[in-house]
Length: 494
Ligand code: SF4
Image 1 (spheres, protein in one colour):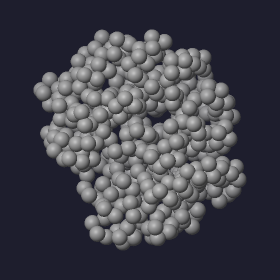
Image 2 (image 1 turned 120 degrees about the vertical axis):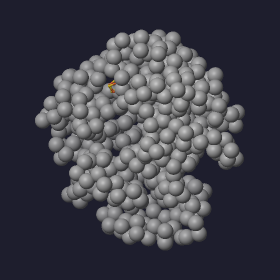
Image 3 (image 1 turned 180 degrees about the vertical axis):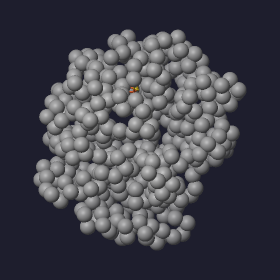
Image 4 (image 1 turned 135 degrees about the vertical axis):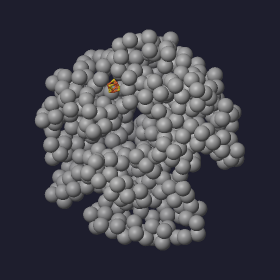
């Protein structure tokens, strides 16, 4: 970022937060009308660009291996740090709202066998990428429930990675935990291994809501886990909440937020429930008729934003909030925030992501790939000495340009046109994106963005709608929608 713009960002962040709060407090017809009209569409969350539905099975194990090898040969890529993701898919029971790729079983003997295959996969990939020049700056374990495994099994997984990769001393090492199955022994063991961040699922504190989604978790369990984590020295403690679940009302969710604020997390994610029964048929087992309507969800969402901003949390972007003292807020302020499949990150800006395990995603400079989702197939491919790739995508120069642009919108809340010069093949930004800039005039009139010959800035209301603005620059979306016809590709945003 140009130094003068960095300075501007530093001064304006607090002002942005205050403006956002007064905008939501003002609650005018104009604001509410825009929010409802703009949110009530289906659209991608842009954890990748191009988005996952575009990836193809013609990108197979061989294509992934080639892309890994290419990385080793390219001088620039050779220097890029690494971000690692490990998918640990086991859970004891299914939470009905969940769309993660899970293996639900109480038979824990499956876990060791899975780790054997994970080790095979890591040993196939590591030789192509693990060099001293490419240190690991981020590691995240998700699932599933990583702490379904015993502390000894988790130490084994960590050992597999430490043996083959070079970890940066400052690496961000995090995992998702379920307070219902995570013990003090788990936490001690994880802390000793070097884990420094932790993210807890909570969703809602009301018993009726919890029962309706088959996830009963007492506030005492959550509190005990947070306290224990803090005492051990974990920082950046994150809580995941979901609005839009059965029996949630404005009043009930306000009570949830009061309880959550008492827990004093460093970060909060406030997810809009994605009701996608065509992908996760078990969601139909919930009392669907008790789910709040789009309008009710909007009142819940608005109340939650006001409450969190008034409590002093900063709005980071998309669904994320953080205390002003948290690294995420610092990164937002300094313009160094980045986004990948694990969400917002402060460390992994230019890193290549390598995903291990069922359905895990890898994202390199020139290609995306995703592992197979079915356990038996994952094992069979590895038994055959093959990388367990399911599908992927090779990015074109235009994709790379638009990916950079969308990340900039979602993470920095602005576009500085001159930042893209090297990717425009000699054309000016205004010429290359003439259609998109014309389309954005409407967003400008609605107070979402401000446009100038040098760039675009998201205004406070536009920060809430960053993905709607990003959709304007998505060159594949119109075709994807036309091909999908009636079948929804993405969840509705409200
Ligand atoms: S929310 Fe977590 S514990 Fe529940 S099914 Fe999904 S991954 Fe498993």
